[in-house]
Length: 144
Ligand code: HEM
Image (cartoon, rainbow, N blue to C red; front, side, top):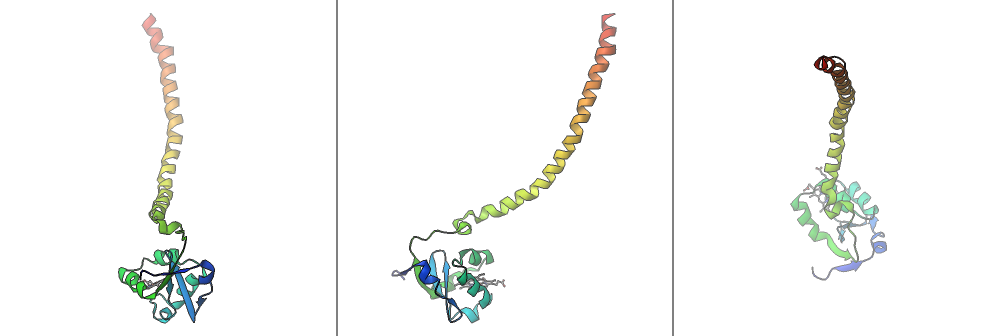
């Protein structure tokens, strides 16, 4: 498959129907018309992904098996010149769960922050009281 046809985005956008359905995934174009009925995930998702212009995100979000990936080869009909991978396909997808984990971390962090919010004034009061007590009574006694 060295001689992949170079297809334009506008050409691909003409093939989004049940009788003629192309998918753009990672810069490669797949004619899945004959696969629509056999797709384990259903034909609707394929038609929707086809209509969206770029099916890369949709395809990768499902976490397809390696057998699904090797199956794709038989539907490959071309590629897109100057293809720019969408966000999730660039390997940065792994940073998404970590950013949501950060959101989770926010909770204990903010509750410990509110704990310090209470503790700090109390500590300052205790320190002020001890200092006042020392200066008022103890240091006077020492001078005597
Ligand atoms: C040429 C492209 C595609 C091929 C060859 C393909 C193939 C497969 C295969 C073999 C499965 C069964 C599970 C597995 O082995 O991973 C599957 C499941 C599925 N696929 Fe695809 N798929 C393609 C594109 C897409 C796209 C673009 C979407 C968009 C959302 C999609 C959505 C799904 C869903 C939702 C399932 C069901 C997962 C489940 O029920 O666990 N597929 N696909």
